[in-house]
Length: 79
Length: 162
Image 1 (cartoon, helix red, strand yellow):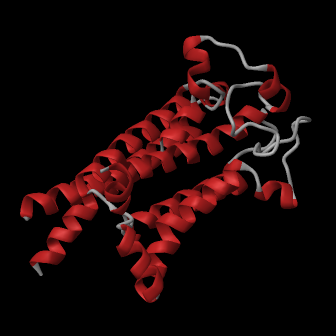
Image 2 (cartoon, chains in turn yellow, brown):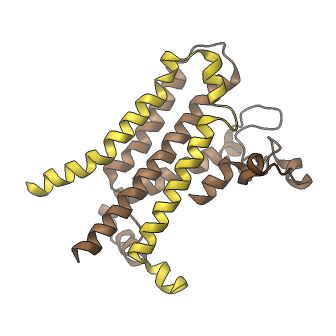
Image 3 (cartoon, chains in turn brown, purple):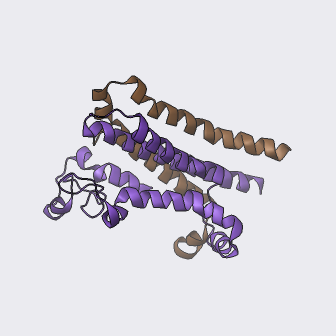
């Protein structure tokens, strides 16, 4: 029972930001004018830069996780 | 992930202000220094029309969807049932996403398709309709970010526990 509660808490730690970001992101269609929405989605504007930023952060944390766990690839190719 | 980052900002082309080499410019639909907008990978042709059929399968959007579908959803699902897949994943110590986080990739795509098909008004500019595709990609990048934090915390905790 304790494990289930801990598991749920861990899951919610990730699920809540995901749900909040998704709702905020998609709700712009309900609140913002057409011109603003069009500008946001253009090349080299906010959404594209945010995508790049999240990919960069994901890359950094995957790399840190990789170095922490020291996988098969680490032992055979990098060590 | 680093490839995705570099491609999204065209490897810093705007930031550092360098031009597109002639060869890439010739085949890049948007005339930028990146691979994902090359004619073969872009979702649109040079004439601006959306690709269809086999051509569409090679588009980077489709390949990216296949990637997250395979890695975040199918792999964890198959891992439960296939001894061979479980052996390979365990052997190479591939980080296996928990399916309850992986499912968010699918939910994100379903929300995108639903809004695009049923809720967006007609007669708007192309950029207006492209924004929602960019949003879907942005949220999927955020999902990968969340996954990476999950793995990092998981491995760090395991080491501390040991």
